[in-house]
Length: 311
Figure 1 (tube, rainbow, N blue to C red):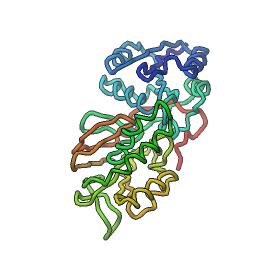
Figure 2: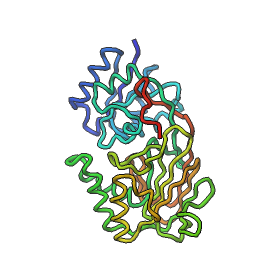
Figure 3: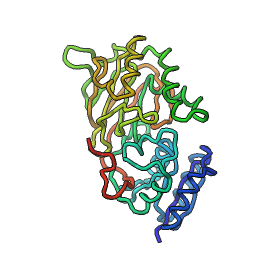
């Protein structure tokens, strides 16, 4: 019988969740299950080090998957030949959305028992961090910080509320954005993100959505070796509101103050700016480079399905 190590974030309060119990019951019907309820990075590293060949299953959202992948990278144990299972139990579950994973806990457990491995790209940065879905700087990161205050009470509604609060006060940052060595911008003769233009948001994505379904990078693919880079200069009050409205349906990519570029390496420099990587917040970032590592890991997806990975 296959051995599974099911990682539950004790700090997120999911250990007593009825949905988690449902998933564990379904998993135990077909596998030998060990549960690791971890509360910090040290406990997570210890649990992964002692898994003794068990397949890792993450219960949680993008932040939980991010933490597990980061820990596997740091211990040299991330292997695309050893797929990770995901039981979506986060607030947004945006990576699961891109992969077409079921939200129902019993159905998600069935994917882990019968699904196939899907190789995925991993975005890594020059500070030792990883990105499994999306990293964004600027107003999106400010929105994420604001949403933290409302998540426990409001769930996914916290994300648009946080965006509204952040959008009232954010006027942009003069960031320079380079994609594969070229400055990002709005096309020939238009604006460029060369450090002289105020930028509202920069996003580097392999997943399609953030914040529980907002299609920030609607054409992104998590397995093509490229990141979708979205840059917005919608810094005026009216432009900010219009950008936020268009983002809800993915129409923001059609705006003149938005550029979408695809590439393997992205560098952002400028004044101190907030950053959000898979829901993990960081303040006062002045320079960061990300590069795409193709097929660096894999996730179990429904057998016989596209897993939401086609354009």
